[in-house]
Length: 160
Image (cartoon, rainbow, N blue to C red; front, side, top):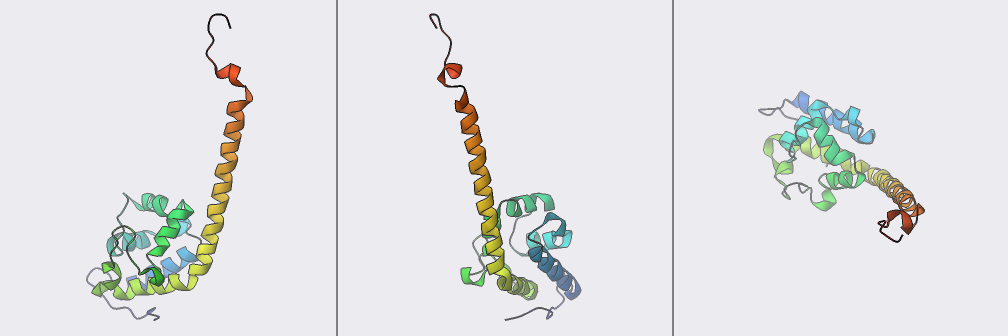
């Protein structure tokens, strides 16, 4: 079901605004969730009409969902028809069924669905890279902490 372009005016969002937000959504997905592509209008739509809480501001929202690839995977679950398009924050589907925004929200799901395999592959690569970095950091920390031996960390008492 492709709903792209079949938008109707709603009380708080014109058909033209819906088309613009959809364009921002596509660029954001294609751009790998870069902060510079997370526009104010896309943030407003997600937080006001897609059952996401605002997380204080656009930067806060972006930090919660797009800095950690595992969080981005969870975010994408909401736009995955195979997972029921359930709100990741509330567990319900009212956001996708809302009369005034069914057209734009459905179009956003359609656009995400066509890109999900590639997006999930990219995010999995980011998850692996992050885990490798964390492992390397932990190894370096362990080496640093154990380099001096037990004598450096043991308390010095009389007779030592």
